[in-house]
Image 1 (cartoon, rainbow, N blue to C red):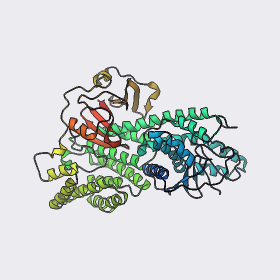
Image 2: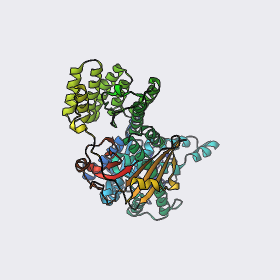
Image 3: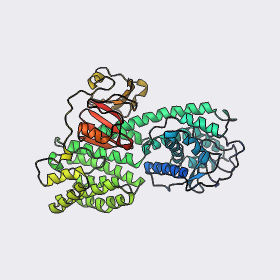
Image 4: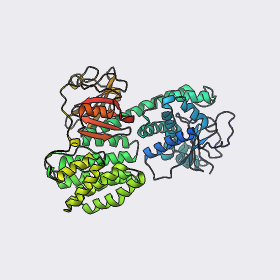
Length: 546
């Protein structure tokens, strides 16, 4: 079979005798650039442009975290006919030099534009769109072949590649690239394509479809961010449902891992007694685990913990070198009282994977877990040494566990809770009490995540703010987040605004009660106010919650 190509913009001829398949970056296949010669151009290597594109590509592959299939190599080529494509003969994804030049015209958003194009191609590969078209072609000589071929919708494949490719770029840290329509226009101009190509949608139609896809992508990102915030404030049961909603549309090792973590934390919240949690476990997406709860049954908690193990196994199946999932699996076995398996996965799986994959924090956390296991075996001196080494490496979690082991009365300075907040926080002049008294939502953006859980939004809660709300119909509880936009110019009650550094934030509010890792940085949580950090550990947005 000849090379199957998935092109982003400048695509195939009408002749399918060569069994070549191409894809556009918009939503439908486009004709090949008029007069383009079907010859592979020279590869460009060892240049600044190549290194920049390769860096973006590698971040996308890492963010996808799916190593069940061979990862295509990357090439930057001196061509001007297909924008970008997957060559299955060589298992290679190619970005053309001309397309790279167009992306660079977006200035600060250049890498986001590159990520958008390459994320689209990687989605075609991981979702097996080319295989589906090839399968249909196998039966084209039969009467039923026409029907089979019609079932494989190019429009759906292209829309899915824009949608999931955009989420991949977001999860790799490039944010939401909402300039797809403008990118199409610039590529048309650079490749000297007419507004209307014979037999194909016009450029304006393609722009409209891409804009609509971007709007759908924004909703998926909002659900993901809501899951992160619910996790940050300790609403693990609801966060589980939000992560699961995203997972139904987009699969990654991090999402499976997050599902497992929320299941473990729900079990800790509901079914563990305080005396069972003398030490804090280094579960990644590490939350505050000093919990006081009622009694529960071992059977009920083991149902949740076994479910978590399945999620961690799914993450590991996608990436056998994903160290956090091995560590979380070891922690889960420790919570179940299975110290043999816990030690095995900590020492023989998590630690080697952390070394292979360069997870320095996971290496420290493995020692913390082994220290906890040593205490269970009565080896307190060995545990003390492990906690001390981890604390010396800067781990506040290890310092806390060391203080518990030494039965110190005082809590380590770095583990003290944040200071109280004497002033009412307001965003766009509204306190959370004001928001609750007059809560308006956009009914076009309501998402029903399950039979009992509904996600509400008001993108215009204020001139520079939005509202996220989760309603649990079983309990009647509504959890609300009033969040600033990235352009918000106001400040918190303690003078923190967009762009403030993490150190400045800690000086104003103290160490956070909770924190959660996100694709871009962290969410730091204080009583009734939280901060979303972005690149450079600077405040990207902040919000109040109730």
